[in-house]
Length: 277
Image (tube, rainbow, N blue to C red; front, side, top):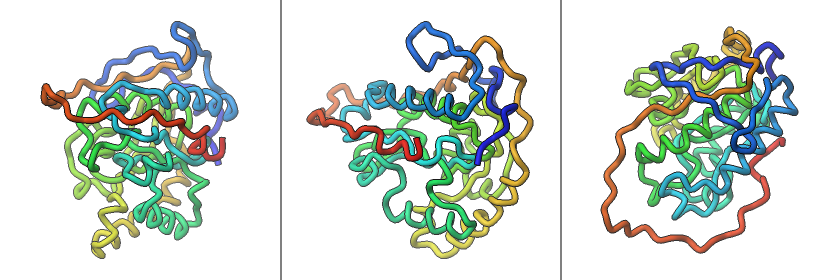
């Protein structure tokens, strides 16, 4: 699976909501990248983003994480899933969706003749929030740039958002998943025009038969939407790749005496989560 060459290099275009555009390098500070035209080149640049993300300390979540959960799967996938945040198992293993919700996701993929290795799976934040709380706005904002780089470099045809957090973040809108699930739309995210397809989070369907039924029905439409191919892409940019800056978010108030402990430094695994890299 993959995309056509015409869809691999795109110009800076504001995402929905008129977000400002900023230039960002994927290599050394101050360097410039030319247009990315091949899958191998995009994979190498994605590795560079991963190496940067492994040591990220942009928000407080780095103080309690075990592993940065960058994402996993096919780095040239047509189909990408974006969930909320890593849980305890994901934090331990460095892989997204490895618990019961992940097993359900794999089962639903199998029902449409896809495997986990055919897609790329990521989250809105790469580090586990303590006690599995909801991600705070500054944490979402800190990870947003990484997420948009993944989208630009993987260059998917379609992105399925799993649950409220991912759907609201990528749509830059507060409309909930119960109103949006199963309704596709074309959006420009970072440098990439994609078919955005909101779905219920698999965790919400584990013990609710009605939600599982809706999730399964929405999943069955994925092959026909993928068959439509990539939506029209913005014109190529010859000066380099640009990425859309994340929108300003209201910052959560943190107590002055932050009780969060700093973890014992652990040696992180060598790119196990990069899947087919």
